Structure formats: structure tokens, C-alpha cells
Length: 395
Image (cartoon, rainbow, N blue to C red; front, side, top):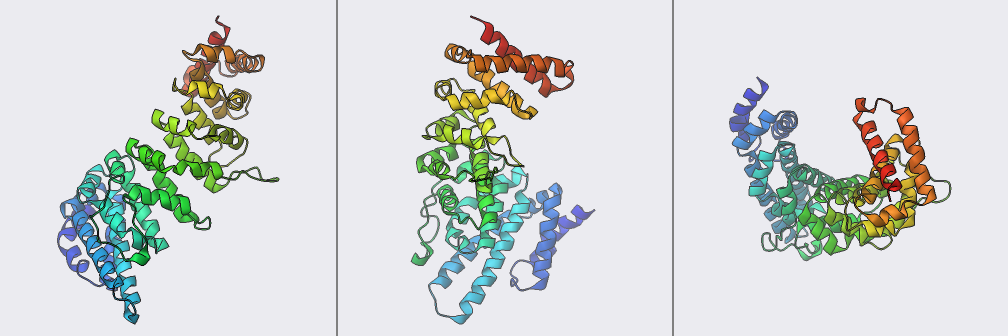
């Protein structure tokens, strides 16, 4: 019933209550908030909003706001300018929030936003977004929703938007030739005290890191070099910083593909830094360095570099003696992947310390999980150990 009412509401009353009204209009704010709430919980509401051209209308409004802001910036010195600008920024914030909720987990709406040139419009607004933290947070939320499980949307951030927006006032700063580069620049220069925006920009990058096109831009920009400058905990502190965890989550997504794994291995000192980070704790994500090692071990071209780093092998072998069952599984799977179809790894892993740990882990696992078929994770762990034992005992 609610959605049926919404269908009529979007086509008639919403236009009267929202479009063309001042940002200070109470009825406009009530209508926008009601629509935001409905779009966030109802897929049918999203469908009706799409039919009612809500996405196109929001995009046109954002273009108009950008033109208005650029025009007003050429007339400095008026007392009313700041108040007018604040009102326009509020309208822009509402439009982006409506888009965010309309696009949430809806590929059809995301396709419509792609066709309506969402990214070029946001790119043209970027100098203004940089000036307002709350606007930046909303724009990053919108981009996170837009790029989630939507490869075409991710790729669109890599496109050049040159010529698609007016030249900004010089005091606003230069615009990079793609929104992807703007995001990377923001992540590189983010003040540590701005934790909310920092978290949002890395969440967005983690989405984008699953795209081949975006990984190419990340590689060419040398953005990953910033990871190597992260500081490890000092003194009695045994916990990694929140920024380090954001970086590790990004690297984990990058390592999901062979091209991303190559990017990680090209970073001089990255494997050593990851082994050091694996010694520290973080309550929400304790195994991120191990998962990155796990992913990298599966590619044949990566195996020589992994095998040449004794620290990584030591960390993976030590996982078999960990009290954490997930760490045990990750270590066993990574070692099996490393040794599979690679004779040099078989020879190297036959060292007494590694072979002893594998044998002991297999013996203990058989006693601990006699009915492993009931639990797929336990069954997989046993399979990894069984194959490791067989390969290490073969000639």
C-alpha cells in the first residue's frame, strides 16, 4: 500500500513539494526526507522513482547547482553570497542523498545513473565538494553505493572528464583529468584527524580495486607507495592503527586478481612490511596480512618471489601452530597453493621446521576433526594438510 501511494506521490505531489522550491522550504525538506527513507527500504520505490525520472532530475539539478556556484564565485565581496552558497550546498546535499538511496543495491538504477553521466557531473563539482566535509562524506557515500558490484560504474571513474565541465575559479585548485585520480589524491593527502572521510575514501577505493581499469590507474599513479610509509606500533602498543587496517583491506581487494598481486609484489619491501604487520593485532581484522599472502601464493608467476622471502614462509608455517583456527586454515591453504605444481617449493618446504609443523598439524587435525564432512571449513583444512603431507613426502 505504501509503495502504491509512493508511485502517485513521486509523479505528482513530489514535484510540487520539492522541485523549484527554496532549500529553506519546510515542505520541501519533509518531502525529501520522506522519499529518502522510502528509497532506502523499498526496491519497488526505487523502481517507481526511476520511472518518474528522479535520477535524471537530480542530475539536472546538480548540473544547475554547479553552474550557479561557478557563476557566483566570479562575484566575490557580496555579503549575501555566503548565505546563498550555503543554501545551494544544502540542495546539492539533498540531491546526492536521494541518488544514493535510489541506487542502493539496484543495478537498473545504477545503469540509469551511468547513462546520465553521474561521474562527470560529480567530477565537475569536485572543487566545491573539497571545501565542505559533510558534502564530501555524502559524495563518497554515493560513489560507494554506485560502484558496489557494478564494474561499469567503477570503470567510469577512470574516464577523462576534460571539457565536460566549466573551468573552475583558480582559487579552487586544478581538477585532475579523471575522478579516479581525484580520489587517489584525496586518500594520499587525507589529514589523520578527519577519520570519517578517510574511512569513506578507502571504502570507495576498496570497491574500485576490484576493477581492472581502476587497478591500472592505481598502478600508474604510484599511490601504493604510500603504504610503505605507514608506521608500525611502538612501545607496548600491540595494535595496528585504523589507517593501517584501511590500507590492508584495500590491498586484500587488490590481491584478489593476478594483476593486483603483481602490483603488490613490485612494491620493494612490501612483503617484509606485511610480515611485520602480521605480528600485531586488530580486533576487527586480525588476519588481513595472512589473507594477502594467501592470495598471492596462488599465482605461478608469484611463487619464486614468495619462496625467496624466508619471513613469509616462516609466518605461513607458524600459522599451523596458531590458536586461531582461521589462521591455521589460511596458512595450510597458502602453503598447499605454493607447493602445488612447483618443484622448487617442494624442496624448500622440506626443511625440518616446516615439515615438522605440517606433520604435527595433520596429526592433530585428524584427532580433532574425526567427522570433518559435517563442517566444510574443517574438511578443507584437512584436505590442505593431507595434500601437503603427501607432496612433502614424495620424491
